[in-house]
Image (cartoon, rainbow, N blue to C red; front, side):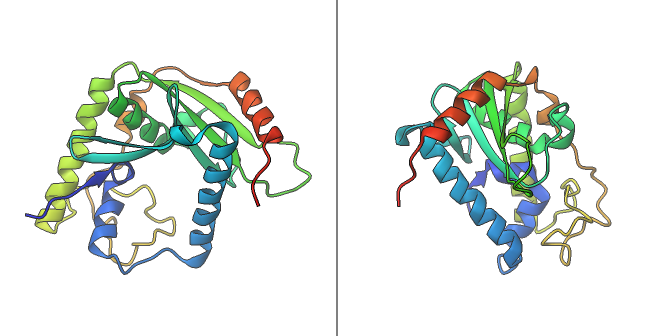
Length: 225
């Protein structure tokens, strides 16, 4: 059988990862691509402002799973952009995939804690909402995270080999303008979506001190032409 290199982002939504490989001709609409490009641009500008090149976009690999940590200096740091206000009281409920991605990176580099930086794109220039929110997240049981990663990896690889996504959990984007809605089987799938890795997270809290430090660095940064 052909070898498969599975990415951490594949493991966040293995149903969508299956259809992305099986139907490479399906691409996101232009509006969604523009948001993705804007996010990529912010990652580069933000990373250059708050860290140095050797710590940015660190490549990691473990047991056939590959990933890229946005910033890895002291602990893994994931940078996210969104135009939807984030509820600071319950990141686990509103953004479980953010926690899952960070948890997998922590497991891959054997770190029991990491940070998620969320940049909220302003929808109103008069808004007084701070543009950044920083969360500190701990992961006490890295081995359990690894076991769940290997389980998801094997499920996805088996589905790709068999050309059958029936055993993959329902996509979280089902019924929410998913790019693969015309070809997916979510309407008849029996495996519910779940976030086992996010549930393994320990303490989660808003790190206001780090947030203030980052805002200070951003204010003092001079972007290149």
